[in-house]
Image 1 (cartoon, rainbow, N blue to C red):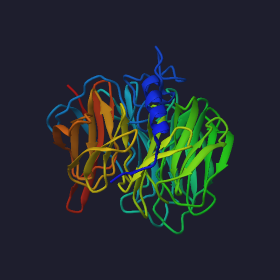
Image 2: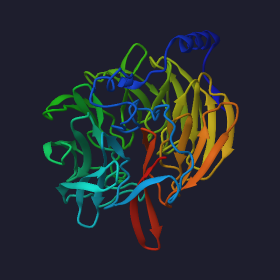
Image 3: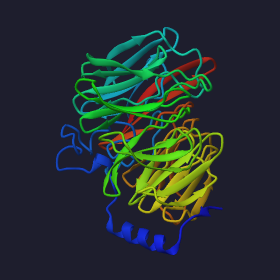
Length: 434
């Protein structure tokens, strides 16, 4: 049962606000050409960073296939060298991934031809210095590559530090920086946050039981623009920026807080107790409400007003590794143990609940009127975002080891999965379309 923490005045003001405010689409609001500050990117045809153009898993309305398999609606499929949970990044005529060879301890960025799936280049960006331990569900290449339409930004954990690497589209390194120390000792579970592009900067988070921080570097030079200290607490969530509550806000959960920062300066705007010590999912929003979920050691999902002044509701459900999806006044969750739930965003009322199958690590994408959501076993559910009932459209099976989230753009689905057969494991990159 949801724990409701709101009063009638707040309910009326929020309902009024929701009626007036358009859905915030991160810096994300589409212009006639390009995405926000990035004219060389297309909100329709590109998937330039973690969680897509709108930064919240919401793609365009262009239909994509709802039924697909290893043989059905396959445009192409190709082998991926190494191992990683980096989700596909799609820009122009290419698809990019981060990967790692754990035996030789090499971090790399890969480029594939979008039309054929042919691997175009592989750039090794660091050698050695891999951590002695990592969580079995994590990899040495979990962060998703980001692109501003001119460059590629990748982040890797090696040599007890966070390394930022920027490349051009031909795989040439433009600049490379040691962003800061990163050496977890209490929980040696690796690294996961993805680079966040905001205006002229790229933002990196490094949160562990040491000198945790979030920092912004100049996209062209790598020079530091600002650096903000965070709590000494291991957590894995990627920060995200959206325009909400009348301003640009950088949102992040973890360390038992839900917090908002000014992405221009790194200064704290507000914070409120919420979620848990460790979170992995990226925060989402709808109108003037933000949502977060975690994690470890307890479970909590909550909704907070966009100025941080009120916790509207919270419950004891969790999406630990995966993110939520918020759409038209409702929040959709596929919990760790495979329970699909729809809550009303304003007060947390449970609209419906459906048992599927877990565990779950991938985050959802809403595209063409359907939500796409996979579990770790390679089962990808497609359903409609309807608050009245769970409306399943298709159940697809792709591989049997599935952690990365799909990228959906231009009517195509790009999906990184792996096939395990005994002691052998091979990663694949699929392009599905009609």
